[in-house]
Image (cartoon, rainbow, N blue to C red; front, side, top):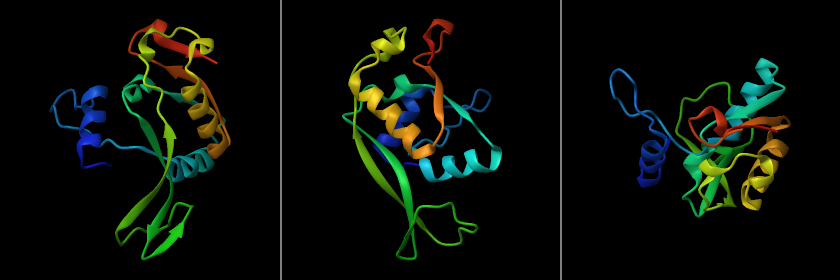
Length: 142
């Protein structure tokens, strides 16, 4: 979760507010350590990426690839988090393009294709569907 301008911007762009309470949802960069753990324990074989258009405006996109706990860097999900955890990020180039108009994988900007490949490589599963907006025609099956 990001408690800075970037976190607020992700929240605003994604409309991440509770539908009943209007409470702001927790937003931040993708946590590949937690996602990889979830994929493993749940036997996930494919992923769906929603709201990829939310990242359109960023010069760079970050991904948490490890944690620093008590000065030690680990790349696995800890069994217990009793102390402060500091995320370790890798940074990728943003695509700076309005993805809401994209209707096929061929139209993805090269930076977004690189981001998808990066995620698939780190997670070991295919991203089978990508959403570039809220409408049905903005869902791209790969």
